[in-house]
Image 1 (spheres, rainbow, N blue to C red):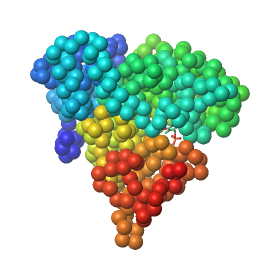
Image 2 (cartoon, rainbow, N blue to C red):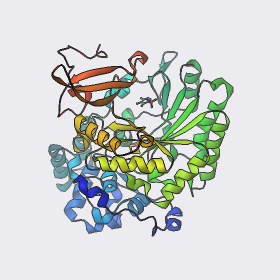
Image 3 (cartoon, helix red, strand yellow):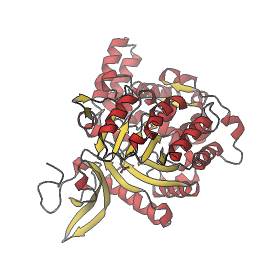
Length: 450
Ligand SMILES: *Cc1c(COP(=O)(O)O)cnc(C)c1O
Ligand code: SF4
């Protein structure tokens, strides 16, 4: 995508935008089976629609009416970043995978055949990057605790079983394997008691991060059932509750007009009245997500409870691989009272080949975006890889004693002693992930390698 064009893209216009109309919209969602019912797709060619069908049979597809009507500029399809973010594109499957599914679909293969082709392909897409299934699942009295991940000492991730979908799906999502209905792969919570039992045994944990999917797809009363118990005295060590969500983009109505919106905001206030920090870890990829009036209203309403909104999201080809887009995203976030938190490197899973950006280029985009905003908007760490040893930040390219190297820093580590350690890799312009990098200066391994 030509980067210079991005700022010229027409956006949903806040002045003519009919906030009333959209804010009272009822939640309506389209999945792969209903692709052909989306009116805006009728202007695409039958070939394009078939391509979408092929891709949507392997990767998760789910988009709601608000995203279609308010976030996508249909004059700019297929380049529109939110269209790329939510609608399947042919290139998201490797050619050989695409051909296999296309062939099966157009020759009218029976369901079992189709199913087995699809699950073979899915298994080839590294459904659980960074050893998520084997390495980060905690145990309690010798038994596995489902629905929890505990990788970094101070933070436990909690996946409530009823929050394992999203209001729409992102085409690049690294959690895609959880959405495709494969029960064996599903990481989901049995119940809130297990979370409490685990936290009771782990006084070193200060942060609980409720994640998914999107926990804000849950009714407030369900979310409350998980969070309220953590406000009692026995969980005084839990200082921060984070909720990871893309609802402020995909369904801002969640905190504006949904039946239990007020109750959700009341829960946010209660958490803070109990003396804890509440952070909504909002997932944003493009400033276009922040343009609709209702998206801004949602931010104001969350902020009015005292909750802090922190923003994070990956850098992705076809969506936001330009410094202008990031600078405008961060600047807009700051103006709306959001703190930019992380810029991630796209993980090594799913449609990665379509979205990946070389680490060096990612760093250049980050640097150029940083250079064009003031210090207030320079709070996002990154570009950061969530890899097996920890979160590794690309600090830049430099030359040491005549050797061109990439400077890196571990900003979050499986071993707390690793945090903030700098290290160096040989320069590599093509590398897109940590495992493509080799230690600089002739060393045999990185410090975290054994
Ligand atoms: C990023 C992350 C966290 C939180 O790390 P912070 O640096 O505290 O934001 C916790 N657990 C996992 C598995 C993570 O990837
Ligand atoms: S909102 Fe988050 S979890 Fe949901 S599809 Fe997008 S990236 Fe994945």
